[in-house]
Length: 342
Image (cartoon, rainbow, N blue to C red):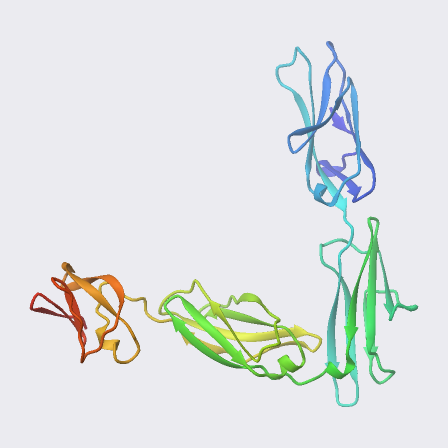
């Protein structure tokens, strides 16, 4: 048994959107065998004996899919099989990336025409404002000393599967502008940090920015979703699922028409994890507007177990529960017995 179109490593090459065939040959026997083509275990064609061709037009989703030719007859208890994998040239997906070099007397802009899905590009061309072709490579270099370059730059990339394009609109007056990041304010609890920001020139330039964070002892930055709603002057976002009592480093960054730049780094430590058996009365008059109530019968090693949250409390106006505990300064009091919680 063999697959005619198979190359080395049991691969068959094709092109997205272009008709192709898979041909399975087998030495025919008696009684005559039936041949099957299967895609990921599902029969897509059957026939024989001796030879079966399956003709189809592959789609993008067919790339890297496994096809299997199997055959058997009434005398064979074990079916013969041959596996191949489909490798397709896909329709390109294009993107224009821009970098700029800002000098005293002139400015240089470098536009790169990139394919984003890993496909090889056989041809490029650049069009300015929908007119004539101005470049036939993947890189277009513009210099302000030659002529103004405001307008639309469209790059088209092509391969055997077809072509696609991407367009970038340049505003010369928005290039090489100094960036001023917003002012940052940070607040934390044991498992999250709230980041709020205000002002900064990136709002006026309408440049979306990102927020990155990492643990102080890690080199891995994590990104939270793009902040691109620039209509409000004050915004905030919460970084969740953090570790208690841990220092985190937070920064903003922009990667747009003015290149890549980052803000200064801000440090914030998440708060300690609250002990569910500890008395919080010491903070009632400072940071905590509410105090926990405690149950006397559930004392654990001199501590009272929290059973309810939300009752107002202050050292000068303690609240008691019949048969239970109440908070008083930094102590938890129960049945005339006092347990120091510090």
